[in-house]
Amino acid sequence: MELEELEMEELETAVGGTYTAPLCGPHEETELRAPQNSSPLASSAAVPEQRSRRKKGQKKKRANAKAATQEGSSAASTAASSEAISQLKLWRRREQKNIWTVDHIQGTKLRMNKRRRPSYRPEDQEAFYRLLEDPVIQSFLEADIFLKVSDKYLLSMVVEYFGRVGLPGHLYNRVHFFLALYIASDMEEDNPTPKRSIFQFLLGKEHWPDLYKEFLKLKVEFFHAMGHRAWVTPELCEEIQAQNPHHWVWSRVRQCAP
Image (cartoon, rainbow, N blue to C red; front, side):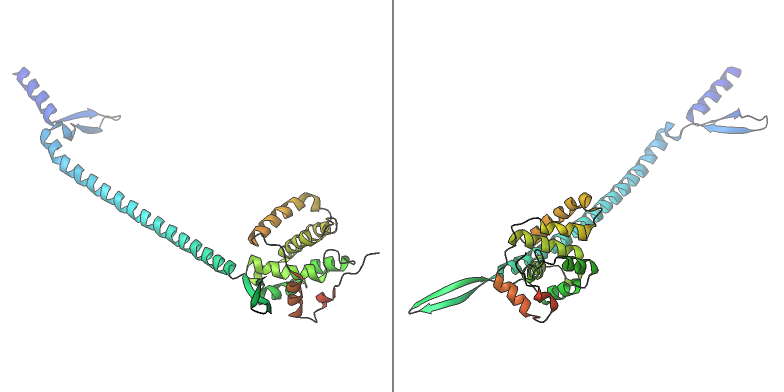
């Protein structure tokens, strides 16, 4: 009889019975139940629930992935549109640089002259005149007593260069002014020494040996933004000067150095 009772207890334990074991204290007990999945019925009932959870998780992941894809494609589309608009504006602007004018008519022959359209805008002139009031630029102009790097023609080229870069006029600052003047001097002058005085005034007499290489890197970027077009005709310079002929800056006529 005792053997049968022992076998019954083992059988109950195998199919989900309970076993009571003592914990640390003499009065504390806990129940360790047999795993639920030990019963085939319990296991088969849990399968649909697990599948349902998996499907919900998969749907949620797909929804999140789809939303992320749509958001990424929307951002990429916006960026591509902005870039395309910028390129279109730049293309239109470059297409309008050159115009044809009649040079002279002789009999039945018509000779046409290709003339480059100026790039400067009223806002470029306003930016130029505003920067002339900058104390560093004024000190630089006063120091160039022989006008080797800042006569009226080189300064006129600064205005045209501003137009070729195409920034909004209010964004031009002291650094842009000296970058444009340096490139103009590169283009027109054979002596490289006078333009180096720009380093001392812009970067400081103590720090320019450590910083002038950074300035030269910016010069390359500025030249690239100009479309690599540095040549400006004397006629265009005179046209720029004629927009405000009585301004003091246009009286900077170079004289022969002693």
